[in-house]
Amino acid sequence: MEKTVTEAITYRRSCRVYKDELIDITKVKQCIENAVLAPTSSNLQLWEFYHVTNKDVIKKLAVACFDQNAAQTAQQLVVVLARKDLWRQRCKANIDFLNKAFDKPDLEDRLVKRKKMALNYYQKLMPFTYIEFLGIFGMLKFFAFQVVGLFRPIYRQARLSDMRIVAHKSAGLAAQNFMISMAAIGYDTCPMEGSDTLRVKRILDIPRSAEINMIISCGIRDDKGLYGPRFRVPFETVYKEI
Ligand SMILES: Cc1cc2nc3c(=O)[nH]c(=O)nc-3n(C[C@H](O)[C@H](O)[C@H](O)COP(=O)(O)O)c2cc1C
Image 1 (cartoon, rainbow, N blue to C red):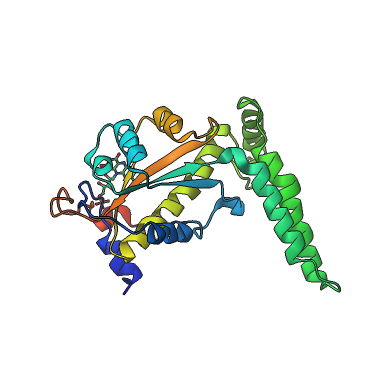
Image 2: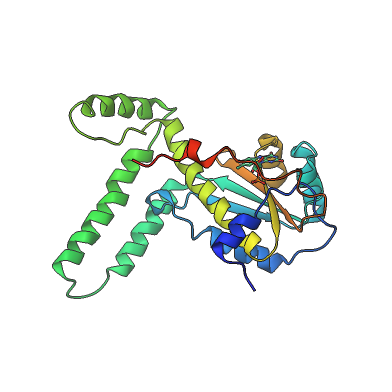
């Protein structure tokens, strides 16, 4: 039986040593299917997941992960990518979806309005937000928005670096969905940013424009898999009720 959300969240720990025991590829894939249900900025879904089950490839990736135990002993790896570069395709997918979803005769006025607004968002606002040229356009937008921001609230995250953060934020949420789903079925994970991303990209033939968000090792925790008790700073130091 699957754990409850709280049970899964509590069970999840970063596991550094896995048992030499196979885990089910289909179950891991189902957890990746849960990952893509995570919320995502503008529903652009600027992510991709490479599910590595081939032992030889895992070995090569473990070297690129600096031979960390969490990678060396992993049964499978999931590489989470931020694909900011795919914004045009994802805008088009949203536009196609909207055209289909609202393709009804005698559409109510309020739905006609909603469709128009949503199409406008993906046809005009998103291209304006994501279009870039060497970071220059983003900088120009950023400074223009700071000026407008003197007079009214405005979205300020317009630079190239801001847009990269936007894509990584959503990818991180998907990664967490994945790890909690794995925990729910008694599988363990370890998120890793400690890797030579250039080598990882070469091994997996990942396009240059894609960015590695994190690599998640997967397996079943060994008795020595957790390096210590969980540590968190006191809750009161991070919680502010206003
Ligand atoms: C983005 C990210 C990157 C991380 N990279 C590594 C890593 O490269 N190697 C590693 O052993 N743990 C890595 N961790 C795991 C953290 O060290 C771990 O989450 C933290 O110590 C808290 O422990 P817990 O996950 O067991 O609660 C990473 C965690 C996150 C969220």
